[in-house]
Image 1 (cartoon, rainbow, N blue to C red):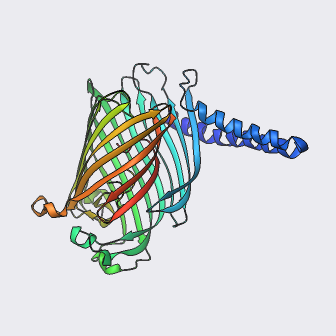
Image 2 (tube, helix red, strand yellow):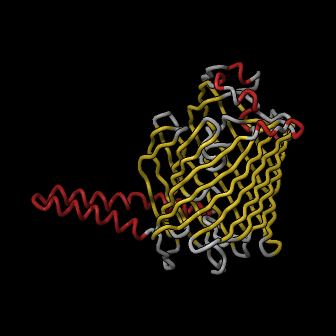
Length: 388
């Protein structure tokens, strides 16, 4: 844990260094007088050289950090500014044949009153023990259509509300055999909803929820890279329990399965497939119901519009490297939400498809721009790393 904290502090301390380079350049502009044009070119040259160097390996660096930021647009959150610091490193004594550990620090703020600050990553220790974590804080102005497919599909139910959310998830796994890992997981969620446009859509649910869960994780992972796999299989099963004796107002359980496969077809082409389902049982609070949409799952759908106790989705994506650090993708998929398996209906299965552009920000770490389409909807996404 001390090692992780030092890594995050290193990433934060590097921000003023990067800003300092820009400040030096600006100072040069003010003092140069007639050399203003030349200095401006020097600033541009530095920026170009910086991004030209981000995807090159740096084996001599204990922590290889790169930064990217600027304006972006999402159909859900509108115009905004984002900053991502992505780092790759190896813990002391870790076998060089193992994948590198990775960490990403991200910040987003938009005109739709969306704010998010978080850190996520996978830390690989000696013996291939793995700590996967995701911690974030959000302040969001969002939309709500109710609970259940029949409510969600009705455009007349669209309403606005705001919420504050804090989330922390972590699992620590031990290697049992080649590619097989098992270990405990913990999860904390706090959601505080407010300013509801149509409060009756919550059906009497508590607007504020606090939940703490424990469980276990089983992982089978043969991918050649954690961020952008070309081949291999990834299988993750999470089982979580939120009992009342852990001070949870709502007692419920959650089972989640993710299965992804990757295969190289021809030069520069990767066919990737993903299946995901999240099932909850018991008295699941509205803020922890299963949903899809947003930047990773069923891209193009408004994140959280479709929500119920259970969700299931699948996607097949073709990824093609085009030229130098540039690539294109295209995908098709489908998904739905339901309260129990007996209520599944084909007419409630929603289609999903889209295209995207990839730029290799760091080696095997892509910045992605996706345009996704669904039933009577579409969405534009800017993010880092592949959707799966």
